[in-house]
Length: 74
Image (cartoon, rainbow, N blue to C red):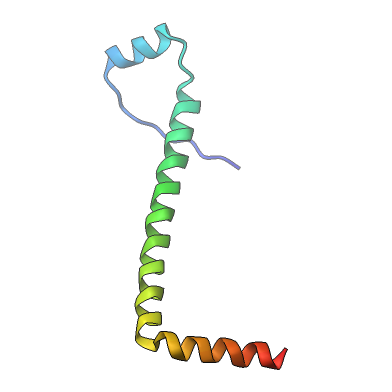
């Protein structure tokens, strides 16, 4: 399902878009998809930083010990 969005642009821009046969819907859709993708990457980066800080508190030795224990169980 899709929804309709509207945007107000200068008349001159609309005329140029028409002159160059630019598909407005396609350009807007792609720009919005890219904006969402960038925000998702930023969010992922924040989660990655949180995970890094948590792992730093635990320490490398403790992490290695837990990994060894998990391997020994398998």
